Structure formats: structure tokens, C-alpha cells
Amino acid sequence: MSYSSDLADGFRHAGSYVAKILRGIKPGDLPIEQASKFTFVINLKTAKALGIAVPPTLLSFADEVIE
Image 1 (cartoon, rainbow, N blue to C red):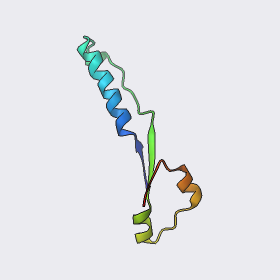
Image 2 (image 1 turned 90 degrees about the vertical axis):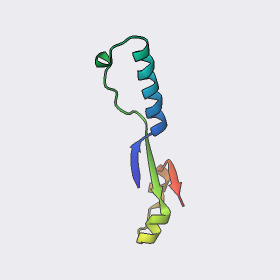
Image 3 (image 1 turned 180 degrees about the vertical axis):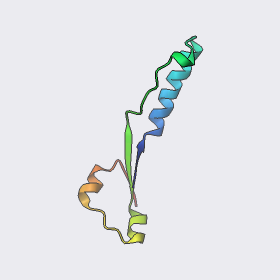
Image 4 (image 1 turned 120 degrees about the horizontal axis):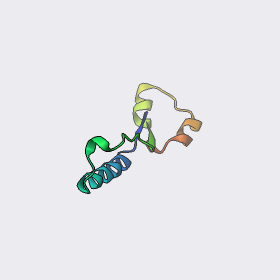
């Protein structure tokens, strides 16, 4: 299982930072932004290989399930 920030969303935020810097704002004046979108991924193939039973309710919360 993995619960982490969404990479595509992070790249979009980085792009907006670059745009602000190119407009002339000093990097030190920009606020630090925290990730706002997260993804939850479950790898069923590995869970089965390890003998771990994943409850269906947990699977329903997952954004992506690797089979």
C-alpha cells in the first residue's frame, strides 16, 4: 500500500511557481505550499504473495488497485 501526494498535481504546482518566478517575484518571497491531493494505491499482487488479505472496504477507498 502507498499513500502519497499526487505527482501530477505536484508538477502543476511547480509550474505555477516557475511562472511566478519568471514574472519577477523573488523565490524567497513565495510561500511554501503543502500538497493538497493524495493518492492511495494497493498492490494486490504483492499482498497475495505475502499472504495478506486485503479487506474489501479498504479496496473501496483505494484510488488505484494493482492486480
